[in-house]
Length: 130
Image 1 (cartoon, rainbow, N blue to C red):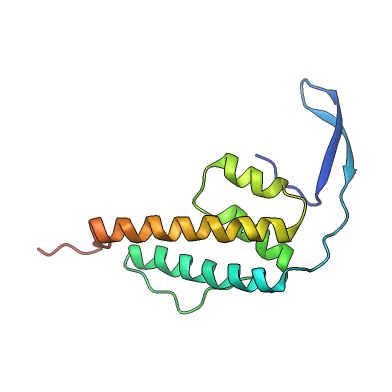
Image 2 (image 1 turned 120 degrees about the horizontal axis):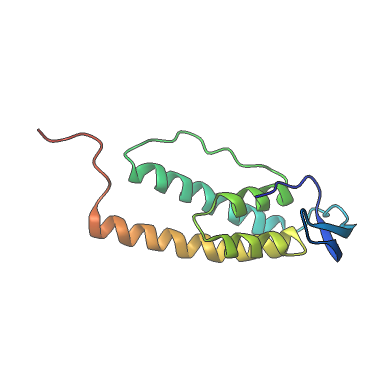
């Protein structure tokens, strides 16, 4: 697993072994757009984080989320309980607005799944009744 500092697009693979070396093109910084969808993701992500905390009988006073749209989109992409292909797909999207729009749908589905699980199983029990 690698953690990048800047977004880039691979133009060509120069070498495969022992390490991949590629020619890349740095992508421009994203302009802040989609403030409405960003606010929607911010609110849904906070609900999601509180719901997960509640499932483990924990309490969260404040969920800190970035104000900047692109930073928010990356935080949500990395911390969603989704498989690596979904996360990679989010990270490969060209704009924060695209990522945020997709994340709204993913968060909605995830929250519904978690709520159904809680209705079926109830919250986890931290302490024994003994």
